[in-house]
Length: 195
Image (cartoon, rainbow, N blue to C red; front, side, top):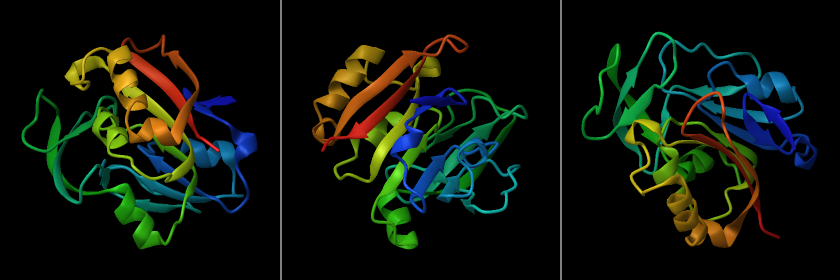
């Protein structure tokens, strides 16, 4: 396992030409780290991000549904988040963005399965992972944001138990995890598809 921007990735498990989903792609660090051997679908609702060469980029939010959400952000790019009903705390910017589900994206790009899905979507990961009922990726690197009330499912441990007791847990196992010491209440996880 290797660490890139705090995300845990099994680089050796990736095969050339596989699709990589980079949700929350600020900086396009996965492409910089992994190189040109793979196909990249990069998503971020931040309207200040400019795509880099060699990636498919969409300025959208990855959510459990298709449609539109509000997007709040800061000029630093840290702590940006999406909301469906209303913003829960003040931000410098607030505008509407399109959102898509994993199934919609896979259908649009004709992707059967991602080799890797990196999910860093500022709190949206909780509902997204609980909605997973099919093996959309061989490995998943997720950053969980327990701060700012993003985790409505209880403590970090309570959520992980709920997740692993769901359909997601039937499909995936925990490969590795750690508490991110640079940001309190953030946890980095790597999940692998069960054989």
